[in-house]
Length: 226
Image (cartoon, rainbow, N blue to C red):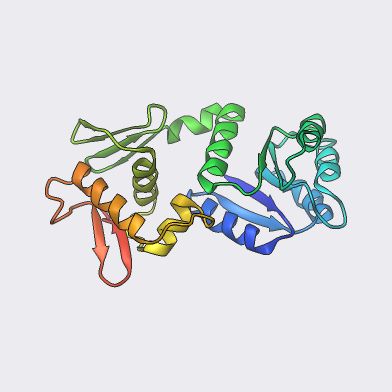
């Protein structure tokens, strides 16, 4: 599915694009309200992340304009805390709003929830992800390995989800920290090592010789290819 990300802060656009592509979305970008309106006319856009404070045409005006020709889901991004921005965004046709600074996991969760609601038929196929003996049920947030239910924390589930969707791709510790915890997270890379160790202890038959989550020495971690 294709997502349009609109923000004049290029570092935010870059971060959102990278993380959403890890989730399997196709991402296109715009940096002002006029460009956003033009790109929104593309019928293949499935959802728009739209910042409120934009040059040329502000996000609220862009949202209202887009609503004259499209019912594509829109999530407003705002750095402001005033309720008036949120109310106006919803009145102008936005489906949801997220206040900056945000956690990328919250953003992806909101996106998935809206896409499931507006297009339930296409989302049903993504309710379960299976890779060999490992099965992720997104509705129940449950993991089974060889039909045995494994209790994972939310962060462990998110990491396993990322690995299963991108088998063979090597992630650095820093990269995993940015994706799973967000670029604003003050922790260090040891946080990743601890979570990987705990995840291995839960899903691996022998954590010392893991079959699923492998180590690329000197680089990071990756999930085996079947």
